Each structure stands twice: as structure tokens, then as C-alpha cells.
Length: 249
Image (cartoon, rainbow, N blue to C red; front, side, top):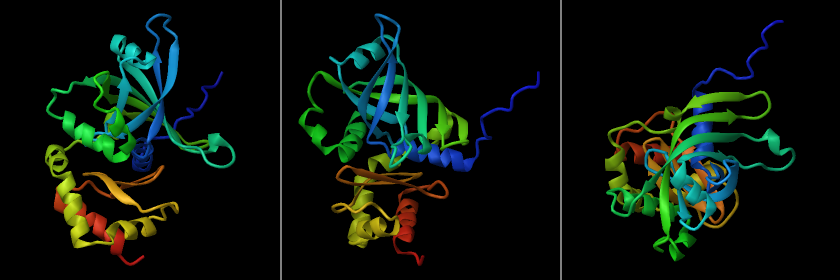
């Protein structure tokens, strides 16, 4: 009997970029954990943000079933990617297998994660500081990308995160970087929304930057843009963003 051809395509840069966009453009996701009582998979929905290196972050109540499950077994899968009109299976989606790491309030990077999360989920301010709520970083181990019919890829966790010594510096100055960019170019966010053909909504604003790209949000819409090459510092990020906003089509 002849060996069947593999359904997987060779993972290339386009696949890696699509996977990162699917993960970083998600405002919510389905999470699957292992029920500690039965061992059965347990699926739920969680709000998602990303840390400065692209690692997904969730905010959960310690009273929820999936939080109790993660406390016993940190393995989890996260499904991201939104369907549109027609066949839901024709749209790209990403399943990321992760190891959940709790983020204690005493951690040096807790405020960074809190700030980045609230930039996407402003309504979470109502409960984010409740004592029974906590963050988990979901460290990617492997990922399965389905880019649509006939486009399946297997990725390593490292394909989804930014490996750079400049991450901490960018995170510390992110708010100031965005503020300076808007002071220099007051209409930059409006221009970006137009150039990137963002869905018609209210006003768009930059809600996150990193060395690999930036995020914009308007109401329930979140848009992720990935740079062609990794930026090296804040000036490089601003230069990339201004070129995207104002370059001649």
C-alpha cells in the first residue's frame, strides 16, 4: 500500500505571518483545558490580549472551571480566527497548544500586561482588579494553522513570538511612543484605518505596538498589521507606521 501524501504544506514565512495575525488580532478565543475531575476536554470562551512578545494573555476568574483546570494541569489549546459569510470552514483559523503560566500581581511585568489588556478590553476595568481575577500567559508550544481548504501547516511555538532583547524597552515606552507619534502626525490613526481598509466603524485608535507590528481597535473591531521586517527600536516602529499611513499607494 502506497504511503498517503501528507496533508501538511511546508511552513513558510507567509504561513507564519498569517498565524501571528490570527493570534494577535483575536479579542476572544475558545480555550480547551482538561477537566481535573473527569479528564475530559472542557471548552470555554475567554478574552485575549497579547504580551509584548506576542504571547497570548487571558484574564480569568479563579471561580471558573477552566481556571481551576489550569491550576491542576497547565496544558491548554487556544482556537483563534473569525468566520465570515458562507462556509465557516473556508476561513483561516489557528489552534495553539500552550502551557499556562499564572502572572502574580507581584511580578515585575504585571502592570505591563494589565495595561496592554485594558487597551483592548476597556470594559474589563470594572473587574480587572477584583481579588479573584488573575492573568495567565499562554506560552505557545506548537500550533496548527488551517489557512482554508488545502492549506494546513504545523508551526513551532517560536514562530508565534518575538525573539528580541528590545522587547522590554519597547514595552516600557509604548504609551509615550504612540503619544509622540500622534503629536507628530495628528491624523495618523485615521490615515491608517483608510490605508488598511479597516471596517467602517467609529474612530480607530492604536491600541498596541511591538517590534513586529501594531494593533488598532474600534468598538468590537480589532485590526493587526505585521511589518515586513522586525523593527529594532521605537523610532523604527514609528517610521514603519508613518510610511504605511502616508506612502503613495
